[in-house]
Image 1: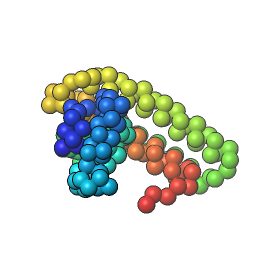
Image 2: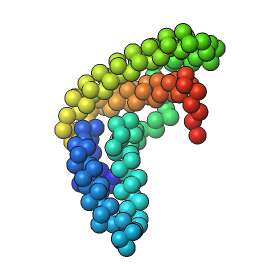
Image 3: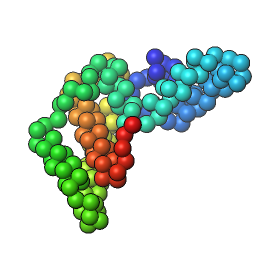
Length: 163
């Protein structure tokens, strides 16, 4: 439904200009301020928010099209231990030097994950979603779960609490 609303094929590789243009057209035709369809306008807002960001688009593809529960951990124990140790380091030491070192580590992970995501997107290409291999879905799930860990650690490092 989400991709269909914007006349797009479900994919990691969206033309964000077309997504935005279609979103604005839907709002222009259906916004309640113009006396039109409030439900369609709200759906467009909801789906645009999801599809316009790579991380939420990825989660949406995984849950809605691959029917995988992202709460099921697929990450290696080694990775999880690294993240736990980093989390403990963040909680224990709030010194500026430690914060800089941890921020550098998180940035390195992010760079590695960005390269990994580019490779996944390249492998995905313009392939129809029904033809995506189980191996590529697994790579995408692992990338997403690792990305979420790094995001949580960055929030912890910067004293940002989640709601």
